[in-house]
Length: 192
Image (cartoon, rainbow, N blue to C red; front, side, top):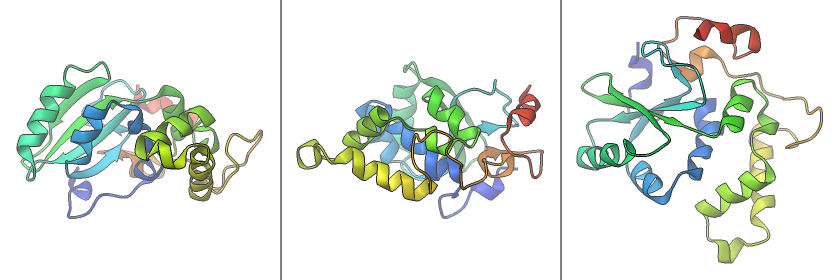
């Protein structure tokens, strides 16, 4: 059931395109390890593991490359407050579960893309990824414009109509038993 996520390329879904950026809130040690490891996919739930559904990001790592770096990362992350779980799913892959920003997460799963990132969070995420000295004063607008083009909406605008459907269970979760279900309030009871 994990097979569709294990391949030669990163599995592309809305979690990767929109939510994974929230990891830049993590400390520099996390980012250094994370950026040096090969990942297969990211998602927001694993139906086989059945942890409580909350603001967790599931990251599937490749066990065939940089295994010593991955082991160091796991030793490091198991002592962090945002660590939730890690488990091997095959000889090829391991899933790591980490807590992420609650507001960003729930806006994402409900399809409220324009409300995911506040101005302050955008600025913090952007400046961690880029050189402050060069971009100071223009970074927030640059990233906001980048996010606007991804979401095709005005960020934080009142009554913004999202131009993309909410995420689906099939695309954003591992081992999904439900076809054609969206993350809407009526469907969230399926996680209980």
